[in-house]
Image (cartoon, rainbow, N blue to C red):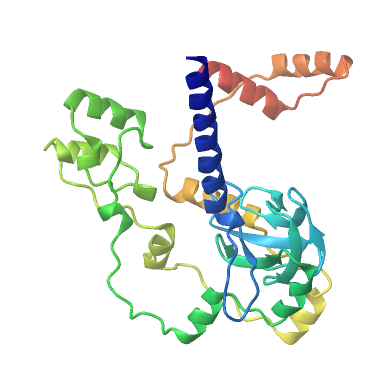
Amino acid sequence: PTVMSALLAAARAASRRVVSHHRRDATPSRTLRRMSTYPPHMELPMPALSPTMTQGNIARWKVKEGDEIRAGDSVAEIETDKATMEFESQEDGFLAKIVVGDGAQNVPVGAIVAVMVEDKEHVSAFAGYVPPAAAAAGSTAAPAPGKASSPSSSAAVENGGRMWPSVRRLLAESGIDPSTITPSGPRGMLVKGDVLAAMGLCAAPAPSPSAAAAAAEKPSTTTKPPPPTSSMLEDDSENWEDTPVTSIRRVIASRLLESKTRTPHEFVTAEVSLASVAGLRAALKARDRRASVNDCVLYAAARALR
């Protein structure tokens, strides 16, 4: 029995080593490209550094072509829709070609941004390297525009997806499967009208239009100002600075616009005495602690919502 147990343990260990070896070889980042015109190499795609990232900007490369790279080294700074993050290499090798240079904007996730090789003598072979996708795009004609399907009409809501509490309550009370309802809310969300229409209590709501389409349909009632003259441009040229919009600021602007155009607003005015808040701030200041009026209002709102 002891010999048989030892043999079985050795067989299981060997099987685990074989499976582990195959898994390592199947990892995309470790796959070497072998093409007729280039030596074996590894293509580095634009990584998805956040769950919502679809494209990013390359702030700067921290290595140069020909530099040696170790696994875990930071090779570039990538600006995502959330922050500027480090792009770390997963492999050892040499940077053969930087395909997308410093300052590149709106690079899609998955696009080839650089090439690595294992042997330094292969670096010179990639001086004129062009990614296969870019070469194919140059020779492939754009497809004819067709009738695109609307996300709101084709998306199916899965159980546990994003929806309002009132929608969840209606679904629980009616017993309707949300995956059988076509959502009409923004970003494919299920709204209360969709559930009521499925229950036969009202007509199906129209799909939510985008803010851009709504703004285009709304007629302008303002008078356009006269075009600026050359003297006006010369006088104002030293009073402003044109700063490029970062991905983070672009996302913030988009979210603020959506909150204003897609969500119903109700404004309430009330008079509130802040004498107690002023006393609290004075007491905190005496203890070398600072709190603004906004901090106090947010704290009170959070306590009220709890």
